[in-house]
Image (cartoon, rainbow, N blue to C red; front, top):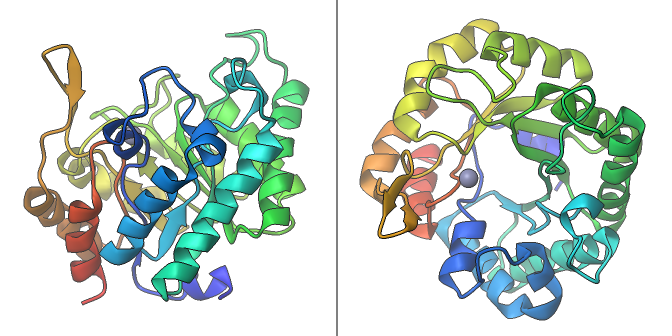
Length: 289
Ligand SMILES: [Zn+2]
């Protein structure tokens, strides 16, 4: 299946939280989730299988942190983790008997670019190049840039994806606060325009807030975006309980808000932290109805 078919659909369902599912499966906080592609592949494949059973059309590979700056305590290279991560999605798809798209997932390098930090654009471009080339070679159908908090880094990552991604579609979602600003302060109107200029094929928001906050922000996205929107909120705003971060919006309440987003014209619907296959099952039912 070519990803261009996905763009012709009214709605496409992404999967839900991956990191939070791996934590629930025993990943220790502070460990590299991506390293499990090599050391605990069964656990990663099981999460993909659960989202395939839930009806997700796009399965996100466990490669969010497969960039050199985020792997300081991991012996594997970004390319090794990406190859293994894409392969696990392929295996899960084959076992499911379903068709689904594979997203190479990319997150922040975890460092700021100049002048806020020390990273130069050339360095950032080179860091993103390795997983992008590995993902394209391994068989990814699209490149999903997620949880970006700094606009300059997101733009460099989109640029790298377009330069080194072998023509794969580039989707970029930023993390907004409830007022529609990213960490580096820009309002979503400015962010959307910049991502479209950089050549993103779809854009939107993931993590940070819950679906209710995105329902409030939707009119602003619709007013400025010319590309398909992808919205993957958390299962509500995080709540700190007993020293742990929890996400308390259950599948039904989550799906109720996602239905408003779907009816409002949002193309890509999925979930981030705290969302589970149960959340995505209900989102899939309404999006594919
Ligand atoms: Zn998240």
